[in-house]
Image (cartoon, rainbow, N blue to C red; front, side):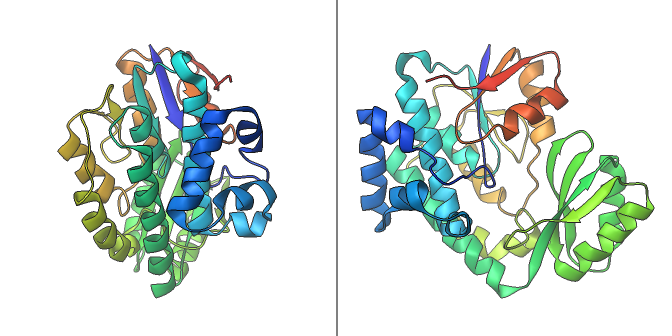
Amino acid sequence: MKAYVFPGQGSQFVGMGKDLYDQHEIARKLFNQADDILGFSLSKEMFEGTPESLKETKVTQPAIFLHSVAMAKVMGDTFRPDMVAGHSLGEFSALVANNTLSFEDALVLVSKRAMAMQKACEIEPSTMAAVLALDDQKVEEICASINGVVVAANYNCPGQLVISGAIDAVNEACEKMKEAGAKRALVLPVGGAFHSPLMEPARQELEAAIQATHFSTPSCPVYQNVTASAVSDPSEIKANLVTQLTAPVRWTQSVQAMVKDGATEFIEVGPGKVLQGLVKKIAPEVEASSALI
């Protein structure tokens, strides 16, 4: 069974999608449509922007989403998922891929999500940190012991977890992680505490937009970040998508569930190779590769 997976923030690069735009009419239409919907030239930012401008949340999220969806569309009839999943933002790409959301509706939601997250980041100084080679349970225990907001945010693969929260709390947690034997506990260059309680203002804002959007019955299950299990009910997908902003991304558990349910091949659709690297660490017995155009 084929599982198609879609990357999240951090996979962007200058020039992303230019080959798709130049060589495929279907991709060109999507890029032009995205520029019209967003009211600025996202394609220009992707093709000619700077690494700094591409890092802006309002650009990064729609850019990665657009690249992923365009790639899936260009694959045409060869794109036949038995199941899909996306890492954080990538969940929106996955929901277009399995026909839950239209491209237009998903792009509008991704843009609103990016703006809401940006606003939430400005309310309170916050950050994230990568923790390597420490047991998940130990990371959770240390976060719980800190007086301040800090939580496990991304379960990326065994021995690789990201924590998220207020700056002082994250710094204190990093010191305790190192004392507990973490190989590294490194603060990341991100704008805020994604997938933590500090994203609550963004969650409230996005909830209204998601509830007002039509979600169809998907053509195959999506393994959502919040539950790490197969979901096919549109109302449940909506609820999980809202919760996702303040809840952890359970990527390790999602991949394990997909393998348990029969996935033998994982294909990453979008910029970069981050997810296939994580899949190989989580489930070395399965195939993991980039989508072929």
